[in-house]
Image (cartoon, rainbow, N blue to C red; front, side, top):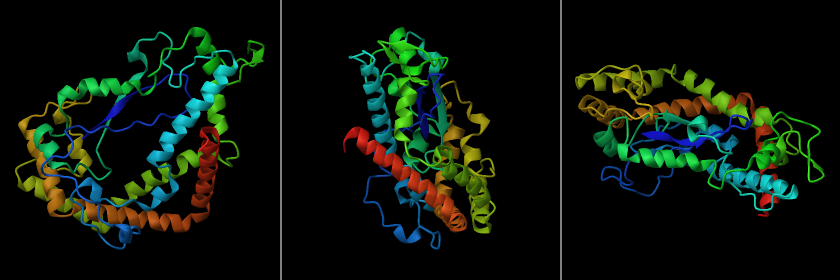
Length: 329
């Protein structure tokens, strides 16, 4: 299970903040010991069905070639922070931190938590399911809260810095130390720096994610996927448990009574259900069949809209070049 890390979000930010998942249990359970990742390159178009037991067995989906990866996201964050810091230094704030905290606001005002399955195809860690059901070790609550420092590891901004960093209100005639503050502050200027030369920023940031959502819903109607999920549902029901339409329905069953942190009560029935969910998925290779259906759908969509997908990739390459320029590598 993945409680998405609490990410501090300033209300005035226009940029989207990615929520990074954190593992809900000790690494490397006995059931899911680390092993070399299998070569799944032959499965990319969905023409073959991979055998999926653990998360590492899931091949990359075709649309992933048109998305920013984890490394891109990390480098983008570093580059934007660096560009914003340089802007702030130019206004005389010479000790401005790379990762500033907001000025004197209670953390709960800009903190949020999201809970999502570890993979789009459901949970696969049997050891965690046995221990925590669809929740996680309650001792991790502090770690999840600490992850909220993803925005604000540095010292808090002063009010004067905040006015330049965000230029709240969008004043176009504000000057500091004889310099005109950018319309969207140093934060907005830094974001704009990384998209210089991009043909369509909205399309670049949203096209593949929107297509993926549409295609994921479409895949559930694929005959092979539908049959695989029905087989999985019967398997769970045959163990004396609730029959669900799909794996996310089991994950989000209100009977687990998630608290404000998103954690569950981890009852025996919840844990039994979580275990049956994974064991049935493994027994019938539910995730492998499901993944293959989605890969086929994505492959067909890329062929049908190749010009748009390629335009997205060109814009992403422009951003990568801008990042290299800002970071110097």
